Length: 422
Ligand code: AMP
Ligand code: GLY
Image (cartoon, rainbow, N blue to C red):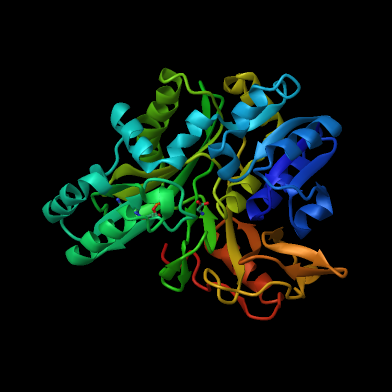
């Protein structure tokens, strides 16, 4: 079948790499894609939220499956758009309906869902401009640090963790006053959870599910996980501290009630659930849902899946996921993200990237890259992820770093401590 992937990051290059391994994939399209996807698929220069242009492409190229990478088209209802259109409704869309996507699109909705289905999470209350005074009074009842979350999508910047009560009260007023536009009309204030983070990925057809490999992401720009938040600077899979006993708790207390909760609410959900968790003592607590795969987590999770990804997706679409078996590569995978100097703040684009061809025994997964005058050049903050495998994650990370040393572009930057805390 012909398949379309929506997106342009390292996540989508990894999807393309896995999907190309399937004998069931004929022509693969990526919209808009990057220099890496251009090497293995056909890039089409359309935006992931231009549903009409996507429809035209799907009809013209006889595409039978659309794999949605980022959250924006899901939150804007691409699944429902396809299912409501006579020409498109038979196309398999891998991603939830708009109702399902609210788990990521609204933090308040996600908290209400967790409460309704008894899923362990931090205690919380939510506030609007009208209840600002109550919100500030609620902060006084909590201990530092204070966690404030803009309800809506705020490009990964909507969560503030503050040590001072005064600062938290001021920030609450600013957020409700429009600091993140419509995204912070409602603000969730929640209990701070002290523990270690990990991510669990679930593929579901709305009834049954497969738990994919776990991953740990390194979110901050600086060594020792200091400095500004980024989309993610590196990841490892599996997470060494997620042993069988802890995974059993996650499956029973989080995964099953999540999938069953969606079904009980009659929500169509054929796609990924990315569950952000904090391990507090020995207990899992959910800090967020995303309705897509993570980036750069995908760069370590998907390459460890040995099963045919297209077959899994076909079963997700058909509602027969229970019949599939998931085969996992037991080795560890690690990825290190190479970024443009200045990221996650202002950075330049168009820098020629040298050394890609010298990389051996690692996967080169392109993120913000494009081709200009025959050269691969930078085209985003996060530029290339280097994924490596080994029996031990420390050996794998060493391979990623040895290969990154061969790469070079003006103001190239990467963290040198991925996995060092474990
Ligand atoms: P989120 O956008 O919900 O993933 O939040 C961004 C980051 O803030 C998370 O990755 C955590 O590191 C942190 N965080 C969110 N909620 C909490 C919480 N209740 N307690 C401690 N840290 C949190
Ligand atoms: N790496 C975190 C995310 O994709 O949301």
